[in-house]
Length: 227
Image 1 (cartoon, rainbow, N blue to C red):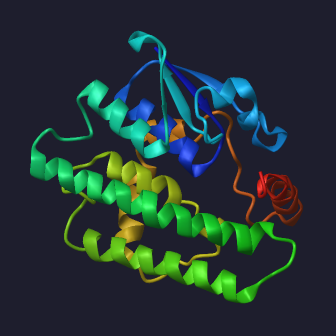
Image 2 (tube, rainbow, N blue to C red; image 1 turned 120 degrees about the vertical axis):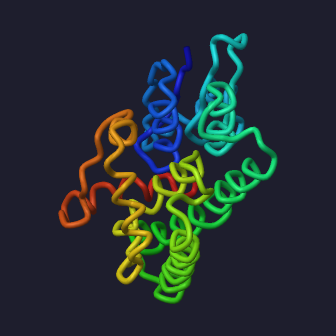
Image 3 (cartoon, rainbow, N blue to C red; image 1 turned 45 degrees about the vertical axis):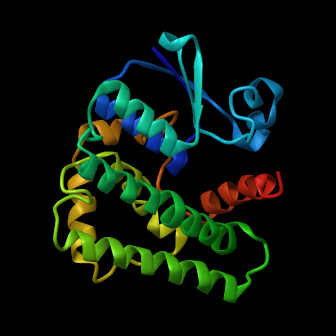
């Protein structure tokens, strides 16, 4: 059994979607980020960096694993699925996983900060991170023009990138003209395990077109920016 400490964010969904796809039993522990539960001593003993998600593998003497990409690799290796053992195939998967970890996630995260959360609008910063996010989407587009999935076969690389790219509207990043990205996102959106995963720990409604809900969410996010 896996204990999953998480919240309804793209990084949190990377862990829950992977658990759902692999069919690994898990128990959810919702972390209230706006209450800074991730900074409490009990949580910091699991992840000294004070970020979600974290898993604890009860079958391995309560082994904690933090960082969403590390969690995905750990779970795939545990289940023997979604991460090949062949060296070349494994390298492709990990390369695209790290593409999300080092590119898509940080750039979209910063786009969120400047486009949604900062009370003052710093347009050069907004442009910088939205444009870089779009550039990274175009890298995905080029790859998906030649392959159904990012690393040839469906893998944790697809899950990781999808959990972020599916939120492009929140970041203010267009996917217009990215036909292969749209095809890929549509295929992933049809996977029942992923649909279950993005409702963990609670469903997060699409609030982009709801001005009041958007402001409430952004207000909570602002409280965490300097923590």
